[in-house]
Image (tube, rainbow, N blue to C red; front, side, top):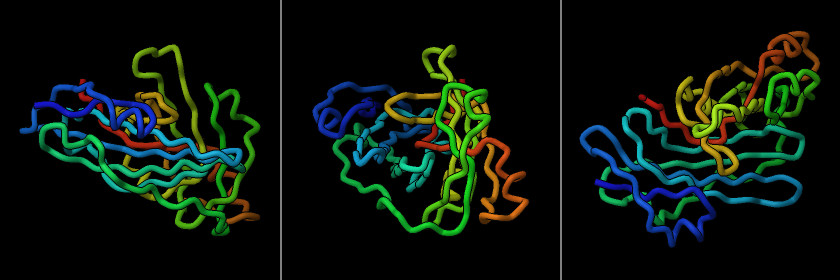
Length: 209
C-alpha cells in the first residue's frame, strides 16, 4: 500500500506523484497543513507521508505562539487507504490577537545557549501550556532546533523520538516539556517558564526505528 509523500506548498503537493510505502494493518497515511504567520506574511506548508504505527498519528489542530509576532497553526488528519492523504481540503485554527493573560518564554533557535535571554510573550486564546521542544534534523543530526512558546494542550501529546514537522523540515524530538502557563506578574511565572517552552509545529509521528 502507499501514501502521498510530499513536504512543500499546498499547490506543489497537489501535483506531487511521490509515494511512500505503508502497511495499513499497522500504519496509516497522514496529512498536515501548517501555517506560519510572521512579519505580516502567512507561509503554508503541507506535510504528507506514511506513519509506521497508526497509534502515533496525531490528528487535530495545534496552535502555538513562539515569538512576539510568530504564530504556528497546524491541523492534521490520518487515514488508511491508498494515497488517501493527497489533495485534502482542511483549515488550520484561525490566527488570533486575543491575549488570555498567560505567558511563556519564547525562543526559536538552533541551540539552548541562544535561548538563555529569551523574552516572555503573551499567550493567545486557548494556549494555556508552555512547551519546550528540542530536536535534531531527521536526516542530519548535526542540525538542531530549540523551540519555546505558548501552545494549546493538544501539543502536549508529542513525545521524545517522535517526528516533529516545522518550517518545511522534519525533526526527531530529543526533549519535550509541557507545563501549565502562568499569569503575568506572578513569581511562579519566572520559575515555571525557566524550562524551555517550545513549539510544536506540527505533527508528530513516533519513530519506531
